[in-house]
Amino acid sequence: MPRLRPDVIADRFGVDSAFERTPVDPATSYRRDVWLGLALTALAVVGVEVSRSSGFFPDESQPTWLLYLLAGAGALPLVVRRRYPLTVLAVVYTHFLLVGLTVPSVPMSPVLQVVYFMTLYTAVAWARDRRAMIIVVIACLVAMFGWLFWQLAISSALAEYVEDEGLLDAPPGLIPPLTAIVVQNWLTNFAYFFGAIAVGQVGWNSARRRRQLTEQAETIERQSAELQRRAVTADRLRIARELHDVVAHHVSVIGIQAAAARRLLAKGDAAAQDPRVPLATIESASREAVAQMRGLVGTLRDTGDDGGPGVGTGRSPEPGLADIAALTDVVGGLDVTSALVVEPPGAESAVPASVGLSLYRTVQEALANVRKHSTARTASVTVRVDRRPGDDRRFAAGFAEVEVLDDGRTVPGSQGSGLGLVGLRERVAAHHGVAEIGPRVTGGYRVRVRLPLPEESR
Image 1 (cartoon, rainbow, N blue to C red):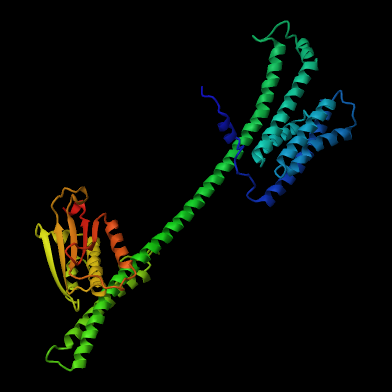
Image 2: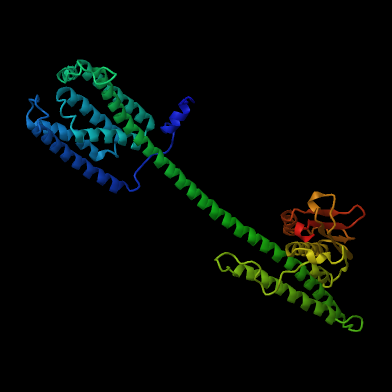
């Protein structure tokens, strides 16, 4: 049989618990206590009169009004039983001892027996100071069982009862009659007092458990709201990165081509180069930028059918792997070549849209950085899709990769915000891929991103 550890007992009785049980609606609860206390007071007085009229007080010489007063005084403190549970317990049980020693018939009234049980239960169930509760309850139990021992020790009523009933001459059971009656009295009182304590403690523990569940539910609700807020923030950051990529790429193209057109118009040499070419590039880049920004803004505006943020509800579909080649056609002032390497043939069709979008944004950001922050004149974009199993377990189902190389060096004082590269690395991390970003030993700059393909794409 496992031993009861002191820390377990202390936790069970809430000795070090910060929880304080209070009524859900104090005003209503306290008002009900008043009515209950008054009702029990009236019933105690009536009960004494019923017992007196039935002949249960044959030896009492006190006046009737005093019996009424003593009975009512025993029940009246219950009007504040939940306001001051320990004080009420001490007062009621002091009343029990004093009246029991002087007028023993009054505390034996059935109504007052209910009062004593309810008082002990209330003290255990509602006491806010659990250490004080244990001290007061133990003191009351010691007093009650001491009084019981004293009554059984000095009283000759039990012996007279056994003798009058002739139980000594013909014992009805295995235990001597007088011993059996004493044991029965002790067992009854044990059940009475410790039953009240057990019921009160169950009530207190249940209230504490309900409070914990309520607090946990509130915590979960707050965490859920926080997660929703973070999800919205993350989505807004994603859209901000998308806008950054769109604006950085297309607006820089527009600026370069506008400058070229201005120089051609200023020279007036239309034969050398037609200024309509850069103007057409400006028109194409601006249209594409507006279309993509409309799609992103549409994502912000759409709330979805269930009240949540919409997903991908723009005027045009998001770009993907097949659109990378078009990026190299609108790069002004930079000679860009592109290549697509696929193994086996047709593998590019199995690349998921999310992977294609991330690779597209990678190329877009890399080319924008080359134009704004590099002296490069040429750049190359290589797209590789390989569905063959690799030695690296991350790419067991194959990979999709883009590599952007240039031959320039960083222009001093042209550092940007860094948001583009942060977004690029976040995309790679989201797909559990790898990225290589930095200067090359042979000169120039390299941006290489490799993303794994899912198993079902094999």
